[in-house]
Image (cartoon, rainbow, N blue to C red; front, side, top):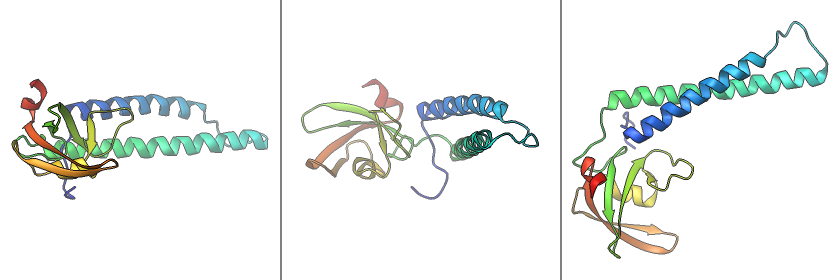
Amino acid sequence: MTGHPEPISAEARRALEQELADLDDERRLVAGTLQDTTDAGDEADQADELQRADQLDRLNRRIGDITDRLRQAEHAGPAPTDVVGVGSTVRVRFPDGTQETLQVGEAAEALDQTLVTADSPLGRALLGRRPGDSVHYDTPDGHASAVVVSIGDDAEGE
């Protein structure tokens, strides 16, 4: 991570936009359940109101984070296609001959088997590499290697 705005892949952008829409819907629902605090009910009602207010604060923070990230990605432009960077789609070949298309991203999404984070061992090894470069990295099972086959649109079709 360079400290500059990093690009994101189209797939990651769609996922963030979908999460943002879902959070906006949830925020509207939670906000609609908040009552006027001048009509103070019993302690259970007040505790419930505080819990919903906390939930609303968490939703607002996440909405702000996603909005900021999407804005930063807009300024960063498209993911590089000549060298692996955050937001790149990269096809790699492992020593056993298998090939896999991966996305290099900032944060792993739950159950997303094609995303590697830029700070993971494989992600760090891939950053700055070009097609034909070999990468070496450590895994829980020991040392591993792969070869960068292609980057960008070329990585999708092979």
